[in-house]
Length: 110
Image 1 (tube, one colour):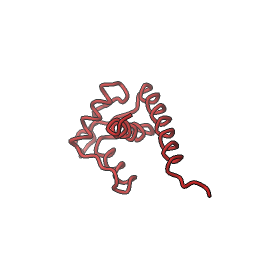
Image 2: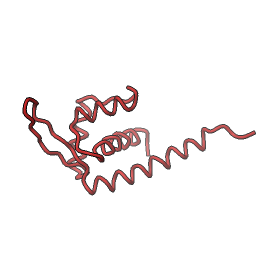
Image 3: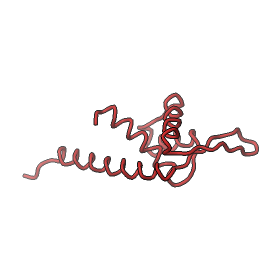
Image 4: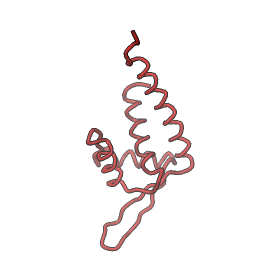
């Protein structure tokens, strides 16, 4: 995969991973990504929501509008069975990629 493809897949994998445990809305997803990465990874509205819509269109996540008293209406996304399969595959690919990089970059034993 090219660098652009890895960035795209990693962005998808981050989102799928966060909605795996429970449904989340877009702002919560972006905040969790930023918090858990220590600020190293950020998603802005202009890039996050088109990605969420794309994942939904592929059938990997499903969105549902929720209205709570005193709050604005939010769209919560959950992982679909197809999304679970895709996430498992992406995780396997990511682990294999990281292992390969580690084998290359680790210092050789003297």
